[in-house]
Image (cartoon, rainbow, N blue to C red):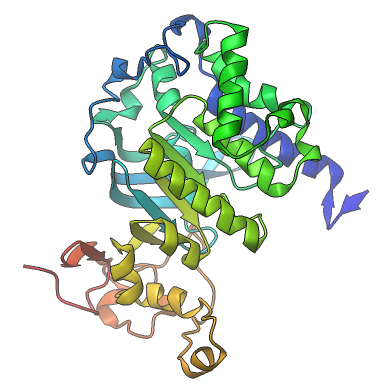
Length: 385
């Protein structure tokens, strides 16, 4: 039996992978290093163990430098390496405490790979990732629990990321139980009820299963689970792309309210530029594993510098038929090259109408061409002196 061209076994395998990924974020390597003092319900958090506290608003919370993630391609019985997929290749950026950084780009550009590295689910090939000044690659098994409590994720598909065999109260309460945050069952149930209230869900949903809820309610459950450990940094991997437009607006407004109320920091990955514009303070644009532009949200949307960013923004429809018909639409020729064999020089030059000889030979530097506006293209503007 096949469903939309995918076998039932394959679909089950994909769903199971989502469940395992969600559980890896709530669980840790060993339970023996967690004490009942690490909590949200009237107890003191142990996040200070790794220095994950004391960062003021506006100071760097996440610092990524020269991040590389290359996946080897092997062939034959001896698994001989015949190539490497350069999913992420030399990406650097900083996320300040209290801000929301948007990460946009085509499918296959490396956005989710960066998210997995920040969550310590994928080991980078090169570069460093620091959280609150601590290199996460240097975090040992005894300290990983503190990191897991501080960094959580909201997944794209609200149904596949929830265990269909568990009730909502158990799903939200699982990380609280695993990390021994509540001192008793009553405290854990109380915290689950507080999270349901915070996320705008009726308390009686705690006894229901995920299939008994709407898509918007399931996504709010995913958000409640992410908030259960009182994290400081949340990776939002396209959290509204699977929802209806009306529900998208509710979730986006809710995420912004949570950020203001709880002082959260977001990495928001998305395809819908209008959603990113409304939620994010700054926006980073990726293409084929590299950052091509990074700027404040208003500045990037008002004055995009890189040809790829201009093409992305020209594809965003305007809710005015007259203006939409009158404006110029920039259509990119061809498709994004394979990360297994990226083009030499600037990776965007095969599709760029501004490319010249040097673009085909030398990779451009990611430079600050205007104050707080970085671009990887020497053609559009001279860098700031």
